[in-house]
Length: 483
Image (cartoon, rainbow, N blue to C red; front, side, top):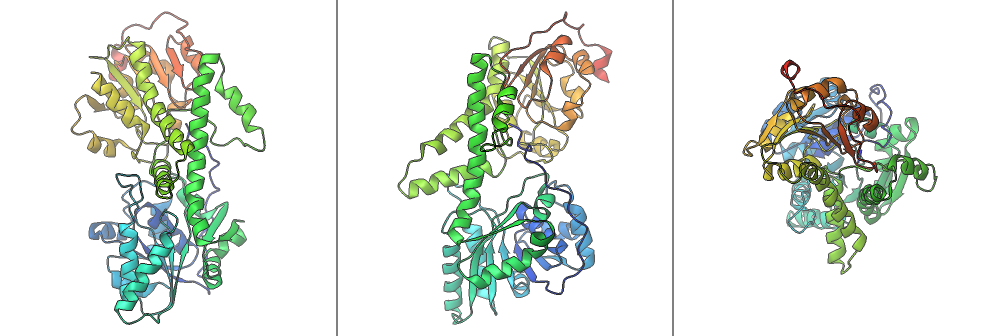
């Protein structure tokens, strides 16, 4: 499933001039959401301090060195560190003292039972309550279960009571993010909607002023609602996307048995205005930090409410099956005998434009192939450093500097991530480099008929046919392999 198929937001506008109504904003958490939020709010003209407890990360950010890849973000950080509108600190005292609006954008990792771990969120709430000296608006930016704002309010209130400052007013709001890795800056600066959940009109008015340039100039849809509705909107949106992906993957499995090309079906479905064309590509499963985690968290919330929601369980089950599909196809092609086989793998990140390996389908493929005795030679344009670290202790995994190095002498090629580089590759050279002739396409990267004409066997998700080589096999790889 192509996870970057939603239309990318337009390029971010030119930096805005300082605003007379600029707000002092604090962002707790210098992770993915926190950094994008902080840098983009500075771009909107606000005075932003980003706080993180990791001193090394704070020092690196002061040099505009990011802990992850995100196009456009280093430039924003450099620009607004120079303008003075963006600063970084590890001091909770300085952070709380700065912002009238205080965003909580720390991680909410999944617990063993699938629930969102709120320890970091509540720790920030406690820090705010222990240090605030004036009225503030606290905004949950992290993805959190329904009811979290109430817990944050209780923690802050308890901290104020212990200080004898229960008279200090504050409000808690929810402002979930809808950022796609690889296009997060553009997504923030050109959003289709801004969801703001608050139960007090002044809090909504303050959030509206914060985002006013996006509502006026970018045409974003302002969506005020209750706090609980905003919290639920984030989970419901991600689970709906996951459901579309898994349903299309089920359709693809059935279509293959019925002799149906899912590209044709997708075009027919997508033209229905009630359905729309987005997120309808079949593939080898979704990954990343959001969809899997949010689905499990919503399942946990349902269980705590005494409900069983079979559709949520089915979505996850289909996705796990789909992640295993490519390795299963490889095993079938070689009659289950993978010991000593060399398998090239293109794509490690869960989607193009990022170096993120979290929940990536590539991990399922690698683990399955190596367990069956195969050697995997992988290449990814961005995720190689992270992958070298992850698989340092796993024998049978090697890495190549380019796609051709990965396929050199390979018995088969597996495509797991739809990087543009793979679509534009010289397939004649790929064929000459390979020792075998199998290509397994999990993302609709290649054109099977054209590859079959080069002497390759192609099996692709969503295609009903296994495309057999139309010409005699190429000679064994020679000098071309070393290039």
